[in-house]
Length: 483
Image (cartoon, rainbow, N blue to C red; front, top):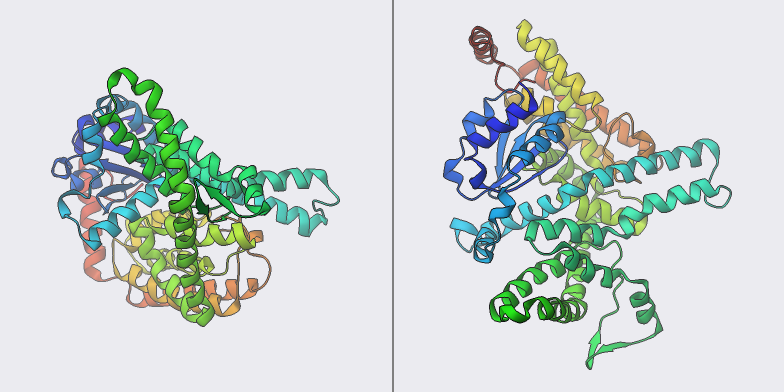
């Protein structure tokens, strides 16, 4: 099946063009937000070739496709290209961003917030990975060839390039948030550029700053996440309000000016400091838990990481915790325990491949295990194709991740780049605790392998797979969840 045909079938089973509110993608998932959830055929999408799983999180449907996601996304957006033209009605925009049918409750708010954050961070992944891999190259230059900014201008230039992602992250977030909140992108960039303007930081350095007699809290907004998001969210509602009350004849001249004069001061005086302090609170709570017990912290991260992957919320944690620590300290010790859970996924898939006597399942398990190991941190193929499908292997990855994560936490291992854990990115993990990182990852993987090999499969699982493979072979179709 071609990617264009797959995209067309997904669109058809998602309710057609008129039902697509927004579409984004991450490393392995096509993410759809719909106007009417009753129109989507989830089971139908899951049984399409190349579709591993459909996960619903916070009202968003995440279609796990693996490495082909970019190609499918490109064809999908061509098919729904006219949808954006149907979104000019402001009232429809307001309703589309409401808390939905679930009502106003804490669970709904938390789910919506998590989904919103994930959808905003997702478009930044390519740049973040590029920055992370560039950091790996710089580490090799420094440790392998003794080059640094002082003795090599090429190193200095590349170092500035690598740091640019974190320094200007608020601006990148403003661009992405403007797409999510459906506000004018240039206006969003304008407001957030104001926050990171070097003269604003210099103004704070010169002494107390007042705006219309109101004291302004001195905050450095470079590398910050939450202030930029709050600014763009405020921009959305200010623009909607002004659109309703300003006469059409003067909208063009007055709305941009009034929007800036309202959003920028409120952000500078209220939302910016609140967002900055809120980010510090979140980071400090997590850091305090780590400082209280690196072992418990590592165990928690290692045990729950695969669950975060299923929900698609892992990028939120990485952005708010790891990336913030990288921007502030140049390293992160808190989230690095997730490395064990990734190795556990590979170990579980390998154990299934070695344990089963079913030739079709053995071939599939080996293929997905090797694909996930060499894909570089893209673990979804073996996770959804094997481990989640048969349940027990996935449960054992949690057990292995817990123990492996505890060992990594105890070792004080760290990462110095915004990159995933793979054989290609090991230099980013060099330094204190690296040996403990390897030991923890291998120990967790060994525990998962043994448990899965001994108790990971039941005879009925293999029998069901064999029958399913035979039926699909007769129909000329792929088995559900295969690539």
